[in-house]
Structure formats: structure tokens, C-alpha cells
Length: 257
Image (cartoon, rainbow, N blue to C red; front, side, top):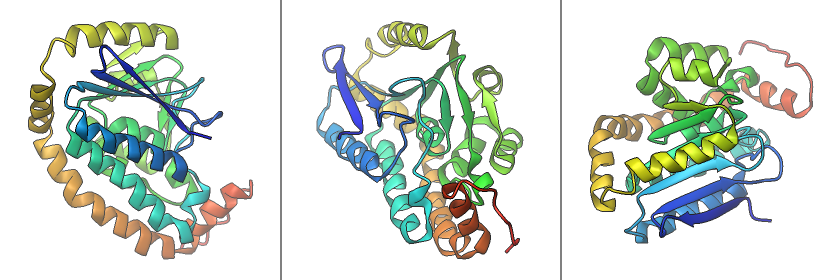
């Protein structure tokens, strides 16, 4: 069963990617593999002006697969997940996330790498990894760049979620709309007005220029955090306990080590 859908719109200048696993649009290994293959294919599509991401159904994404966060799978999972971020960096095609419902963990990280985040009022955004005894490497870098350290650290260290309204107030999302239908309609209008009249080639140079500092920081620090996660965090008892307790549907018993 395929985990993503792709639709080309506006004379194939816009690629609409829909996450669809039939439930919470969990970013498991299969979905990441399909996303990677699709993104790789965009390297040959010179007329693409925008890539959009959204979730099928009520939610954007519950996040990455918790099962694949287990110690024996974490290294491969993170490597494949982070490869998506570097591919989006290298493509330099403008990206836009359309967020409804739950947008958590790896799901929010996928949205965060986008140039634009549009949401409707059902959206709930958060990085709850700390509740499982772990941390989110991409978000730990990107959130401070987008909303400042004070707001970012609150989300990263407490694991709390925020509403679309709060996300808009702190500058995390660009626009909010009443519901998913209005979100879709108004986003199309925005694309027609702000993206389609532009040169696809020039848009890519604009993204590279706007993100020169962002990309430098991501490139240099994401491998460091991946190493910290895989080789130090996952060697602790509590990180493994947090993952296992979630999978076993029980409260974690922390040993603080």
C-alpha cells in the first residue's frame, strides 16, 4: 500500500504531496522511502515552482513511527529522515505545509523545513519527544531559527502543544483559516497570486539566498545532533524506557540515567 499521493497542478508547476497512511499519517520507513524517491525525481523537473505537503483526513501527521525509534532501528530511521531535509535543502524549490489537526513530532519537523506554514483552526502543533525520553534533532535546530530561543525552548523542553492561533501569534505559521476547506481554497488563491507569476529558476535562487544562514546551520549541526541522539541518548536507560513504555501503553518509570 502506498503511503503518499502526488498531484501535479497548475500545468505541473506545483507538486501537491499528500501523506496518507489511512490514520494518523505516521512517517514510518515506507513513507519516508516514498517521499525520498519522489523528492529525488523533482531534481529533473525544472518547471516546478512549489511543493506542498498536507495530510489526508483530519490530521497532518502524528509524527515519525515510535516503533522505529527503538535503539536497534533509531540510527537508520534518523539517517533516512534527515536525508529528506538535506534533499529539500538542495532542491531549493519553495515549499508550503498545509496543516490541519495533529501536527506533532516528525510531522511538525517536516512542516518546519517548509518555507511557508499555513494552518486551519483545528491544528495542534508540538514536539512531544521529551515525553518519550528523547529529543527532536531537526526541530532543535529549526524552531529557534524560526521563532526565537525562548519560545522554541518552551516547546522543545516541555513537549507541550500549541493551537494554530498561538502558532500564528509567535510567527510559526504564516496564515490561519477557519477549516480545512477554506485552507485549501485560500492557499490556491495565494499560490496563483504569489508563486505562479514567478520564474521557477529565480524562485530557487531566491530560496537559496533567503536560506543561506539557515542552510549553513542545518548542514553543520544536524549531523552533530544525530550523533548525540544515536550514540549517547540511546545509550541511556530512560530513552529506551520512554519508547518501550509508550509501545506498551504504560507510564514510564524513569531511573534518571
